[in-house]
Structure formats: structure tokens, C-alpha cells
Length: 101
Length: 473
Image 1 (cartoon, rainbow over the protein chains, first blue to last red):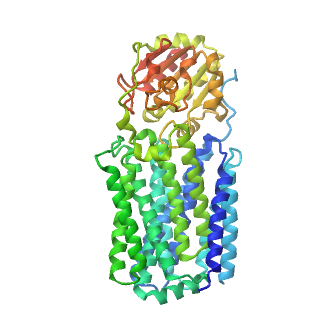
Image 2: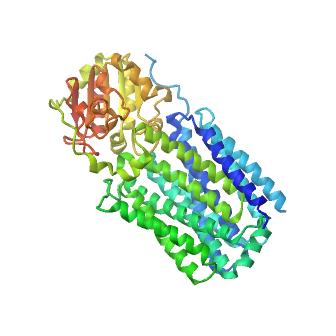
Image 3: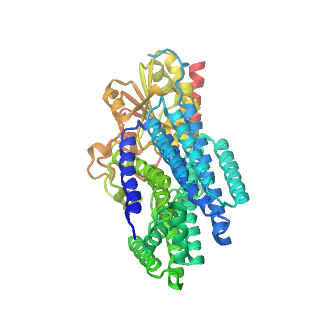
């Protein structure tokens, strides 16, 4: 058994953890909700796995389970991105309001 | 073909990384979210380049999911945002569980050798059988916990389930046993290969993962929800990353990991804001520990909106301190109107936001942004505390623990040590509250009994609207 490709995957896994910590270590609290729902949308990446379960030659049960997974992951992806965009749309700087004391 | 697909996966990973990075700053956040959506689209398109997909299922599934997701996301009111995010998160977890399940079905149907060969043909990576099994088992476990945990959180946030912590004797023992049996099932899944023992172990594992998710979330009360929501968010990423280890897919591993790490960071920030450890939040059963402390002297002094109006009219600086009560009363628009009127009267207006105010991280910021409050006025706890002694009026709207001075000076108080907004240092404090009696956590709030505090009882939205009317007359 050649473990090298597998170790490469573990390597990517480890680096991604550190990258994640570095990327998000200082986010203003105002952005906590969009960050959460935006990253929640990214976790819908599992759609890739769901799609790959839908190969023609796979057993019907696997395809059925995969199909449900595709629907759910897609809800997660589309819903997550749209909700985040809606929220961030409200965070625009506003010029109105009374004179600043 | 596989090389091209993987190249696209790398590009999509880069887009995710830039997207998350840009989400960290107000100026670039929207573009960041769009970038990450492009990355997702690319990853999906790349996956569709694999030959032999069942096209009608692919198209139908994606169309159905997109339609439901889009409809839900555009229709939800901003006040319903916490439960919506929880629900989406749960769907992501269940999707990962099902990905694990589908792979498991393939493995059982065609046998080991055939399955591993197929995997190698698809990904170019050869793995030992035990590795695939461990990955499938862990994906099912974490995906299931994410799913039911998020569902319970959804129930609590939307008010369909009671917000109170559910505790019973021996809870820890039950949890420990469930986890131990789950681990044994994982062992059975690996050792049993594609035989009947593995089938039983796998099915029990699915059931247990769903059960653990429920058990993990029911003992957690409403005030601790921001911690749990962040943690579940992290777990959904971990589940995706684990699914990536089953099908040996880089983009799943990288993207899932990024989400997992960001969720953990948020979780830690939330815990710090409450001066508690994660273990304490998950297993502490906050509501159960409220005996002791809370010896409060003095009495609560009610006031009318007329009194408040005269004080506010003369005020030079006003700080609003919103909490979950503002979300419940949907008072954010009225609050914004009052803030604008106060500014017209020459007062300096600030909003002091506690990191754990509300039911999810940043909850108050979203609500106030919806009401068009300029985000420059929203200030973090430390910034406001520094100027609090110079503030004329602090208006506490449905916030409780986050302004309880007992956290500063009463070691017997269950929330002692939690950083709070120093509302009590303002010259006058008005607390908007639905009625007398201890708040959600069951804890008396020492602030309500202070010499300089006045209570405005009633619905927060109504109270604020009354004040607005008086300013206009």
C-alpha cells in the first residue's frame, strides 16, 4: 500500500486548520453573524460528495441517498449564500441620520 | 480529466480562502461572500465533469435544493435569522451524514475490493480498507450530531421548544455511555468489513449520532445559544472535511477544515465573552446552578415614559444597550427612530453591543443594521465601558446578564467574572423590561436595584414608541 497520496491529504487537512485560524483570528464582532452564515454556506461543499454518489453504475439505494444529500446540501449552499448577502447588504455605510454630536 | 478537475478544485479552494478573509472586514465582506459563492459554483461545475453521473437526478436535486434554499433565505425576516442559520446548518450536517451513508451502501453492495478500486479510479488515491471505514463512521457520527443538534437549536431559537435547559439526573453518564457505544460501533464497522456485524454496528451508529446531537443541545439554555450555534457551525465543517476523507477529495477537506477552524474561533470568542469554558457551557447546565448569590439590596423603582422623556431631553450623551428582549419585541425600528430624535436634540448616541447579546454571535448588529442604524454608532463593550462614567443616560432594552454588576463584585454570583457592559456607571439608567421577576437565567439583576436605575415596565417596542411620540409632540 502506497501511503504517500493519503499523507498528502492529511497534510492539506493540517495546513487548512492553521490557515483557518490565521484567517479569522480577528474579526470585528459586528461581522460575527455574516461570518458564521457565510462559512455555513461553505460547509455545503459536501455537495461534491453527494454528486459523486450519483454515478450511473452505483446501486439504486446509494443513488437515492445521494439524491437526498444533493437536495439538502444545495439548500445549505444557496440558502447560506443568499442569507449572508442579504445581511451584508444591510451593513452598508449610511449617510443619513442627524448631525453627529 | 481527473487532473483538470483537481486543478479547478484548487482554484475553488483559493476562492474560499480569499472569500473568508474578506468576510473579516466590513468594507470587503460582501465581495468576500460573492467570491466564496463563485468558488462553490466552480467546485460543483468541476464535479459535474466526472463521467457517468445520473444527469436527471443531478439536475433535479440541484434545482430542488436551490429553489427551497433561495425561497427560505429571501423570505425569512431578519428577526428569524438565528433559527434559519441553525436550520441550514443542520441540513449541511445531514447531507454529510448521507454522503457517508451513500458511500457505505456502495461499499456493502459491491464488496471491499470493488469499492476501493472504484475509489482509486475516481480519486487516484489508494487507501487501506480500515481508513475508508473509519472515515465513513466518523462522517456519520459528526454529521448526525450536527443535524439533530442544529434541529434542537432551531427549535429553541424559534420558540417551538422551550428555551429552558433540560436536565436530569445521570445525564453525563447517559452521554458518556452513548459516546462509548458509538466508539464501539465504529470499531465494529472497521472490524466487521462488509459482513453482518458491520451492518448492525453502522445502523446503531447512525441512531446514536442522532441521539447524541439531541442530548448535547437540550441541556443548553437560551443565553448560551451563541456558543452552541458557533460550535454546531464548526461541526458541520468538520463533517464535510471527514466526508472528504472518504472520497479522498481535496476541496472537501480544505473547505470543511476552514469552516471547522472558523467555527471553533467564534466558539472560543463567545466563551471568553461569558468567562466560561466550553466544557462548562456544554455540561454545566447553567440554569441549575443559580442557587447562592443574588443577594440584592434595595428595591426596583418603576418610572413612567414621561419621567424618562424629561431626562432624555436634557441628556448630552445616551447609550442604548440592546439584548434578546429587543429582538423578541422587534423594537429595533422604534429604537432607531428614538436614536435619530435624540441626535436631533443634540445628544451623542451610541449602541453598546455585548458579544453574547442575543441568541447568536453578532445578533444585535444584524437587527440594528436592518433598522438602518449606521454601524459607526455600534460600539464594542470595551470602547463603551471606557466612556460610561461620562454618559448621561443608559437605556437597557431587554438585556439582562450582560449588564448585571454582580458579575463584577459578587463572587457568589453564578456569572461572576463575566465581562459586562458597565451600564450602572451611567448617571441614569432606564431598564426596559416586560415585567417584574428574574430574567431568563433565573438570576436577579443587581442593576435593577441600583440607586440610579429606573424601570420601564411593558413591551419594549411600545415603551420606545411612547417616547418617540413625546419627542415629536
